[in-house]
Image 1 (tube, each protein chain N blue to C red):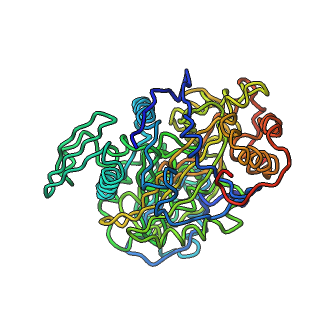
Image 2 (image 1 turned 135 degrees about the vertical axis):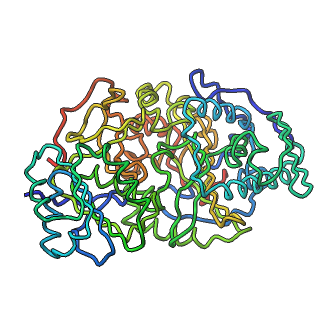
Length: 202
Length: 346
């Protein structure tokens, strides 16, 4: 089961919905890993939507499990990308040509959706034309408030900043501009006293 | 009155001190013997003579040294001052507001001469003499917001108003109570206050936002907020928390009066004329507990407030670990007698 019910949280934390087909001149879909399942469900709800869809899919660890199923939906364009980073320029190029009526669908991990949302909003796409649906890993994209480095796919609290090596605790405070949650030093007042990492939401 | 500016530090050697004058005018924030969140806004239209409320932008004996501390912070971390591209006009509004207010309220310290858009600004305490063209960024060494807030005590959040909300789209933040401008820039009112416990449920932010959205030009408002800080450290930023957090552990019953400071923020809110933005100066005042208790009413009252504060608030404000030491210290100055209403000394 790729769906996860996030517990209630503070007001800066994003909430995600369920993708719904919307009328639009064109459709841009970006998904990673189990996010593909949300696109498969979307196509099931309205098979017509895929004929006008440009799909960027990042399989992460899922191999060809989902890419074959996505190809079978016959989207207008399907691009399989090895990482979000490697797809950004393509994404920006698509946004630069976007017309009124473009619908954007984001599905998968929070890190992917947050970064793609930030890119789309910067390009002037209104929030109301962007839908999100969380699927798969509950890993977080974290910014270290101290060194500003981003650590991707954080699964435990606390965790070690991949840039400066500080032990950080995972906050729910979230910046849409950075597409990241905030990580703050956990042992500043008791150096070396770092609790055992616990898997998020466990 | 001319001010004797102190040469002092807010880090490392911590030579910061309040004079007798500064102690007497300290903005003690508790009008009764207990504390809970409230919107607590009042018009910012002056106040008692000599008080920190008297002028639009209070200048005190710490001015020059605070500005030196700000320059150190900015050299280490330029991200403490940021302005999203659409906020430049608000920056000019702010520059005008401060220059006009300071030159009117402190004519012996600041002068502003205006000939059309050709302006001449003189800041005597900081030794600045600047001719520039108003609204022409190329004629100043920094953007307008950064230029003027490098010369004005307190942090500054410049808020854009749209969609019935306020957006923190620019700021100068070097004396903050543990929040990050770099992280929060671009957030709306509810988002940047998201980590505050209890207050959302109490509806405080909804009421505060409604009030702030309606602030009119020429009718600024103010409120106080507070926390506790070990050592007179202005830069209690999350960015540097891994460096200063350890200082909290140095508090002992013996050094509490000297090391533990009550930190009060005088928050003011001004509507800006051209941009319709709202500027939110957050001015930090620090006082040692041993100085604070020289006003008997304040010592008694602070003891009761800190002792009875809900645990969530003491945790959020970051002094839960030191609360027993602080309460024990303050208890010696509380003889149990009643306190008079209001914040002023008896």
